[in-house]
Length: 96
Image (tube, rainbow, N blue to C red; front, side, top):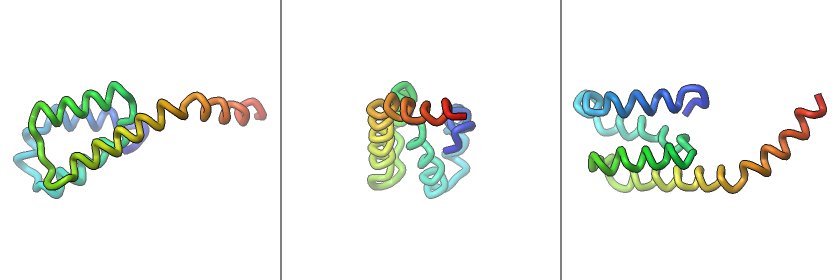
């Protein structure tokens, strides 16, 4: 979920999924995939959904559905609040 590495980590996961799926237990994959909730841009959300749907991946129970719901909420929040938050924070950068 690191701001600086999350997109790089996502690329790595996509490129190495088949290997990781063979080598890691489901619990490890489930924990690793929790990071998709931080990929909160419309383009990344689309990419995440396409990745999991095209491979028919299951993380057991409702886990993946919950992660995707959290991602949808994060993207919607970002879209709704980005301008207001940037405006608010810009007041503090002008003070310095």
